[in-house]
Image 1 (cartoon, rainbow, N blue to C red):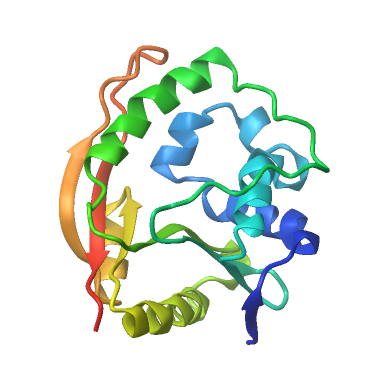
Image 2 (image 1 turned 180 degrees about the vertical axis):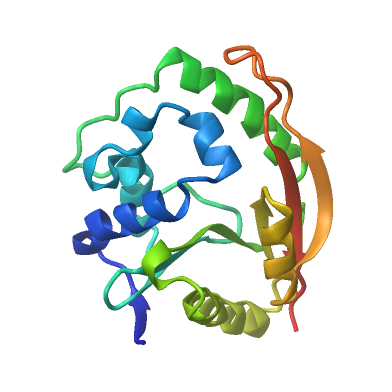
Amino acid sequence: MAIRRATAADMGRLSVTAMRAFVDDPVMRWLNPDDEVYLAPGGSVFWQAMRGWIRNNEVWCTEDGTAVAVWLLPGRPEPDPDPAQAEPSPPPPELQQRYDLIGPAMAANTPPEDHWYLQLLATHPDWQRQGLGAELMQVQFDRADGEGLPCYLETETPENVAYYRRYGFEVRSEWDVDPDAVLGTPGPHMWGMLRPAR
C-alpha cells in the first residue's frame, strides 16, 4: 500500500477514518459523549482539527485514506491561520471544561526535550490488523532517527500500550485526568510513551 502526505482533498475521508477508528476511544468519547455529535455524517467531529493538521504538512496516509498518522513537528508549532476559512466558533462550555481538565494534565507529562509527537494514528475498522499503522509510523521513525529525535504519544488503553511497545515505545508516565465536573465521572486514565531515537 502506497504511503503519501495528505492534502486538503483528503480531509473528508481521513476525518471519517479517524471517527470510525476512535469510536470507542476513552478520550474522544469523554470529550464527545453524545453519539449524535460524535457520529455526525462525514466525520465532522474531526474536521476542524484535521484541517489544521493537514496544513502542518505532516499528515501521512494510505493512498485510499483508510489509515492515517498525524505528526506534530518538534516544538508543536501551531499552523498559520487559513485565510480561506472563517474563524472557528468556540467549543460548547461543557467541551471547553473538559479541554481545561485534560490539557494541563497532558502538558505536565510532555517530555521537555524536542520530539516528534504522534497526535493520532487511525485505521478504519474494516482495514485494521493489516500492518497499515506500522507502515505509517515507520515513515516518521526513519526521519526521527535520522534527526536523532525521539517520538512521543499518549494513549488510553492497556491494549494500545502493548501495541506501541512492539514499535519501540515505552511508558514514560501515567496519570488520571481529574474528575469531570460536567459529567460527574472520572476523566480518562492515560499513558505517555516515548520511543528513543535509534
